Length: 303
Image 1 (cartoon, rainbow, N blue to C red):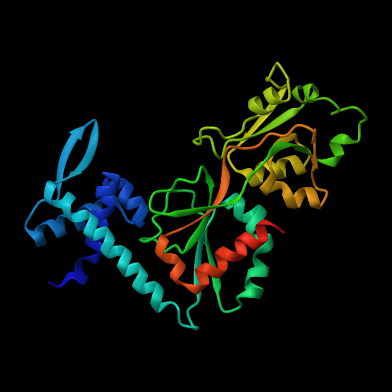
Image 2 (image 1 turned 90 degrees about the vertical axis):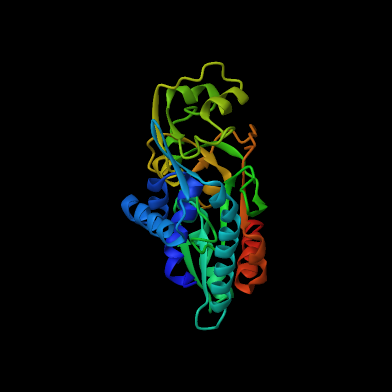
């Protein structure tokens, strides 16, 4: 069997089965839905057997046949083995590339300002950042390691807690030039509050309403609001003096240290139920560069 010829078709089949959609598979593989459909049909013709039951219930859903369903675990395991083999080939001194997945905001506010220390520690390793917010298949997209924000449950990945997080209001020092302007939590409602929408899909993500309730403020409706779906942009808006942000302690650490922002009401502690986790496939610890980056992250977290 000349299997290598059909590797792209197998990838298209696996992604289509996982997403139950040619369109979603195409988005993951960076091709058109028509191309995915053609690859799957080519594979079906070569195997001389259908791989999907194509049902139509409002929109097309691709349901794998019983035979295809039985084959999928082996196909996925095969892709994992191929990725491991390619990873081994990359262990030569001339090809030390480490692919790291993080959110754009975490990259901007925490990782990038510290990354030069890792590069000093491991000068032969080139770091490639993937800041895509969409779900990532570590094996198919050849990601080595990442940092994720959540509860610590990501299927198929080891998740080690890197940092807990506290949430609190911050503002530009300029807003505190007026005496007594922000001396009580209730006064926040007279200000423009900046809302972080980047984690709305996470149950329990801290909101202004939750913080105000913890602070004992009965009403939660502020005079003005700004809503932004990027945590780094939330902090920059506060730095610019446009309002009060509900900051995440990990993201805002450097801005507080530099005096660009000031923490308000430090006596009120509000811990986030979410945290930052280092995530990787279980077999990734076999590779020295992955282990070194993992250890470096934990060292930076306690600096």
